[in-house]
Length: 337
Image 1 (cartoon, rainbow, N blue to C red):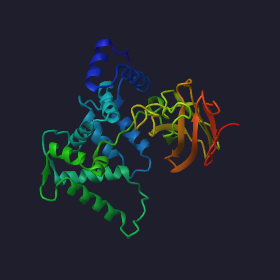
Image 2: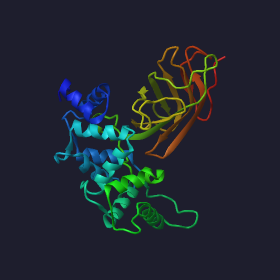
Image 3: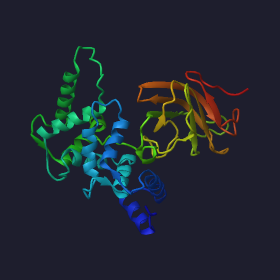
Image 4: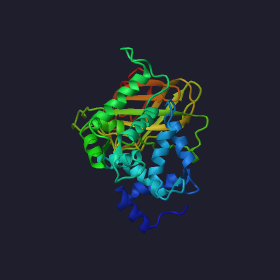
């Protein structure tokens, strides 16, 4: 797979709104992970299975959105088609996210109205993705099927299907934008790029890494707590340690590690066993001090979460001038004396 020409780079940047540097970075990884130049439907579906390992059934949702992005209908996503997924999921354009969802839910007939009958089956497909087979009965005694029916009726009511049999794209977008809970439920549930060559997830567990940057100011000059430095993590498990992981491409913010933000990253790693510790550091200079509130690491394959309260600066200029800390679960590391 050849490198992008300047003309292709300009066109992709114009089409997606992504920077040329970001596009080149994604192209490099896409080329590495997909040497054939495309991501097959089978691999795309398998990625959903891996990202949602406890879902009732992720296949229907994955196939629905694969068809939406596969513009040339060749049963594979080329780089341009894949980059559309990146642009929509990493962007902040709520309308774009909702319009692509409407297109998928309406079987790609963007200009046709979405029928109540068809949309009921769509909601079931979404619930199969976000629910797990072992979801517990509600405290009021409501069983899983009753709970699902309540969610279906709530969704239909919020979209105005209580007094009509179909809804237009324009009304779908408007109603979702006006209701935060509805938007969260119906906007595109993305699958970020895996960190595995050729998407080979065999023998690997899915780890969700969540880091919260605090809201402290520096003692001397009052700078905010965020950093633009490169951030790295090693996870220490009972049976193995991870390699050094650079935390980039946050699922929650385009610019990670900013003041008060919580950034979430996904990694597929060989099973590490029970997590016993972690090493966290950044490579910034004196102007890149970072106040870290906490770190959560969840093995989503096993449904196990480990919490690290950090509550300290990683700053080469102030405090103990350390930018690297060793972490133990449930124990703030404090400052070196």
